[in-house]
Length: 295
Image (cartoon, rainbow, N blue to C red; front, side):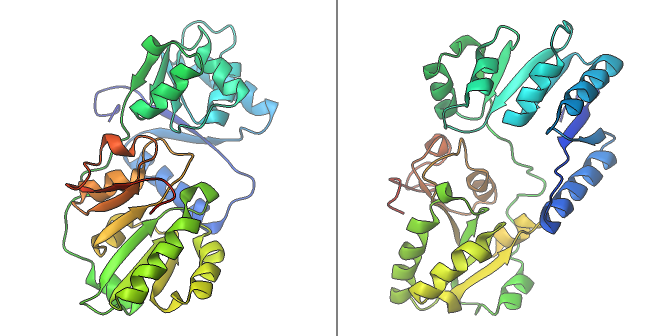
């Protein structure tokens, strides 16, 4: 978007030393898309002091007007690299309702950080409660690529690939595995539904989900109708075969990306009333809001 508006954009992203094949593929695909858009992208390690000096050199050489730091590590290294460099303006982003760690919170409060972007009103409320000046916290909701995530014909081939009958109802879960994603509450709820309705299947996308959640599906006796496909890059195609999606998060989010993508594709969603999800999901119209841990 910034490139389309005529701005020069320079992207620096963290180069992890240990990467899974899925993460390497994701990063490579992102790099290709940036290159095709005419945007310079450079990998750099955030884990050591050399990264700070390297970033400082880039900032001085390129003469940036704004440095936009995304996530805690990027925020920390950017703030240190900008020490006593007066020109660039540091814009920090916060995407979760969790209380910020000590160093990022110091950066958010600092006069050297003139603007903070929060992805929802719920995130802004947490920042203000932590002592960040409310006037410099701007709420900008996370975006969705409407060219990709748009109502479309169902990808029947994917349904056939999984062996799901055409008259079945598919419940979708799209999330990497973390405790805060609420799988401990989602899976028993799915088991109750599947015992009552024999035509219900569930499709799971996400890193580490097969290793962590599949054993629970086996224990609950629903493994035959739970389909674990791991990390996928063609998310919109997978969404197209789902009748509705479920967001069971109980912590650590700011505004669900899956919720935004589902609604953009006119797919109903069931979401816990967590963080900023109730700011974009209209209960009983575009989906259902339920209390946390009660999915």
